[in-house]
Image (cartoon, rainbow, N blue to C red; front, side):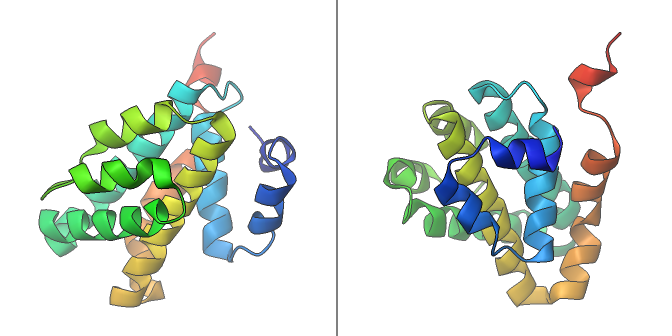
Length: 161
């Protein structure tokens, strides 16, 4: 789904929040919108968020290890749960690893707009936390593959005849 179509479907409070995003945050939001595609049902939204986190895990684990990736995820989730009380229970259930199954089950219970907004906030928070640890240049290099393939490829449902 083009960014502007996705952007028009969000309530005004989300549009206002998005207008203040950094270039990196806009890229994260655009990548997530592309992964969700034009058929934005809640299951697809949840899967897009989960697959993005899995791609981030794959890209970062060789550099910061599984524990480092899990710590960034838990901290990001904690920061997001403070603004989304329904997700506080998910934070409590996360132990040493990224519990993406628990996150997905909570996301599926949200409205589409709330799940999208939470995904954007979680992914942006994760990116910003990593940037504070290793710097913007290295963060961008390590995660470029997470955002760029999803922006250059068409969503999977558009590939079928």
